[in-house]
Image 1 (spheres, rainbow, N blue to C red):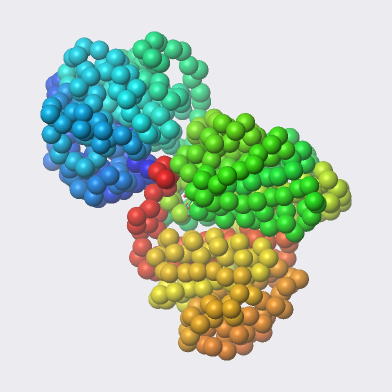
Image 2: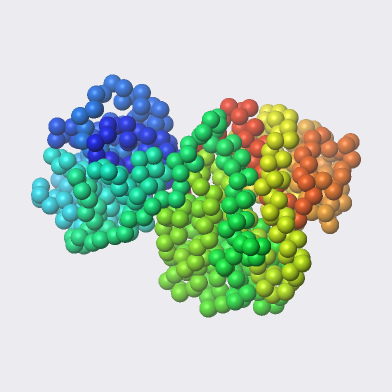
Amino acid sequence: MCGIVGYKGKRKVKDVLISGLETLEYRGYDSSGIAVLEKNKIRVIKSVGKIEDLKKKLKMYYLDNATCGISHTRWATHGEVSVENSHPHKVGRVCLVHNGIVENYKDIEKELSGKYSFKSQTDSERICALIDSLYNGENEIEAITKAIEILKGSYALAIMFDNKDKIYGVKKDAPLVLGIGDKEFFLASDISAILSYTKEHIILEDNEIVEIGNKFDIYFKEVIIYKKVSLASWNIEEAQKGGYEHFMLKEIEEQEELAKKLYSKYIENDNFSDIVINLSKYNRVDFVGCGSAYNASLIGKYFADKYCVKSDFYVNAYVASEYRYMNHCYDPKVLVVLLSQSGETADTLACLRMCNEEGVDTLAIVNTVSSTMAHEAKYVMPMLAGPEICVATTKGYFSQSYLCSLLILKYMYSTRIINKEERDKIFEEFKKLSKYIKNIIKETNYKEVAKALYKSEDVYFIGRGVDIYSCYEASLKLKETSYIHSECFPAGELKHGPIALISKNTPLVAFLTEFSVREKTISNIMEAKSRGAKIIVIRKESITIDKTICDYEIVIPLTSEYIQNLLAIVCFQLISYEVAKLRKCDIDKPRNLAKSVTVE
Ligand code: F6R
């Protein structure tokens, strides 16, 4: 939450900061601002709204002589959305941008109250005052080191000082990357912000301070340390729209390629690759995630419940914000699997740290391999989805549920629940997944279904078996991208209460890919239809449904059950996209949301 970009080098500082902020806008878009050093003076310009608003404002300023700068895009936590609360903050000789939450900012304010008056309600302005109060006018590293000894909570900070042609960065529990170009240096919350300039980077660890002038030095406790430079594997094209109207559509379509990438990394030479952790050495597996990541983990749990019926093996799925406050009984036979696209989500990260403290084995399924979770987990399975810019996840969820299923399948194979022949048959379908996706994207008219939904105030989803879990994700996708209220129920639950919500033309979306329980779900559809519901069915080719009870239908090919949920969700991602478009919503940046939820 909140994005930071800093730059020191030969280019026009303003342009680098703005292009970086545009890439990081997914992290928050309540307000934004920049600070640059011009003729040894720090100039701060900020604006409420999106980066576009800041760009308009910046047209009035000639900042071409700036030599370095810092910038920020905000997702409000402390204080309303206003110019005063926007970053950068400047107090005394210090100017900074902050991502994270400092918990003891009230104590700091109290301590400094005689000396400073504050314009904003933010914790960030108090950090700024703290550093200024500790600064002797000469030793910036000392001032920052002393300040971080006092701060409690999370922070990634980019800092400037009056009369200093340098920028500084420091972080704790929030990401900060140092980009290294040819006589130019960058700071960013996420590598994607600087990929168009350089791929060389260093991921800063907690409480390391980087000082950037004509060269850079990294300090820990005021002593210079040396760190290895890494090379990013992501391409800048992956982080750009590439002719698409929205990132969401681009990212949905990228799932075709992603299916190939996942297959070649995880199903090597038609066998499970070694990086798919073998769960058979554990008695209990806890999947943990937030939002869509949690929904994906339910897919893994579902297959484990259905097929891994053994008295010494249990798979659970938990929402991270609950799991972290539960009491757990861990032993060496427990594995905790943390799912996170960003690898930075506060609650999931807190669970990982709790597990590490307890000494329990952890596996992170993450997309951002430079993320904190990827660093701190014992095992990592990369999601391989490339940069996901649209705030609503699509390819991220796809990859997470794919990998959850694969983990369970490997367990099933290694414990002989399935034999080689059965495994190979399933692999055949995984191999074809990319082709299936291509066909369902190109051949189906999602716009028709979207037209039937976009004027509705409420949409309900039903399914049985794995379909319930696809419904969870479909419902979330619809509500976050188009702001339509939606809920989902196991189909059998409809008549135990929710059917009271059905009246004439209430849309009911039924996922119908579970063959064994198809007749039951069809009966539930009929019950809703006879009360006037508008029925939309996403069905597997082999499950037929009478045209008189189905107003719209999307058909997915007949395939393995481990694939059908992935295809069904791609269909509904496309429907959600079209609905959001018809409702003229800000598809890639839905209101009130941010991509990387680094607050509790
Ligand atoms: C929904 C969505 C969120 C995220 C959740 C977890 O479309 O994007 O629900 O899935 O915030 O984020 P990560 O996976 O980064 O931990």
